[in-house]
Image (cartoon, helix red, strand yellow):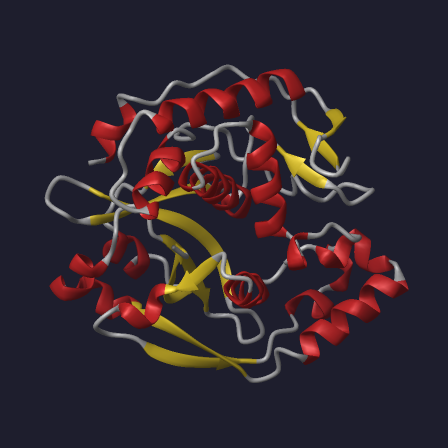
Length: 293
């Protein structure tokens, strides 16, 4: 199925030149990789998508996600001061890849085709209440990202719609426990805000699908092409350490389309999702998210 979509994708060349612009959306600062080529590519993707008839929002997510196949992996693309909305199409990590595909799909579902509308939707997905207000306004933890976006009606946790799921309880404090990994946390105000946030995620309970259950035929059938999946970590103070998008082949088998840090690019997993998870023991299962409609 993802091969069929790939035929319609028009990839534009982009450069890794840093640029900063002001959008027309409330004059909020945006940091582009390359403003001219990034905005042109966003407009082209949205125009191409407008000519297609997606049966649901997940189909649009799959279309846009596949357009980034082969894009180089880039770590820490958001970790620059000052904090501002960053748009990078030339390199992505697992989270920025997912957020970019979601924001494009959201814009498409609104029947809009401008990069300015995409920027607005990316900001409201990535930041608390959709507003950029320093480092801690960014939704760093996926548990926090899920709660905030679900509360505002942007996303829904589709995990509970699956035939086999269970609950996990975690106290989330990985960032404060590893403060030295995050330069912005050297600032005492940022650190204090983080600790307050983490206090709200003590004994946080969330649903997930265990790796063993991903092999069930009913579970495989329940996945939509274009579902966002968050991979649940085996670390005891963190919920998720990787994200991707489900793409299903012609038989309906789910695979993971993701920004791979090991292969340094966006790619479809060589094994089906169930086998991919079984061979990577650092993940215990998946959470599933969809755009609210």
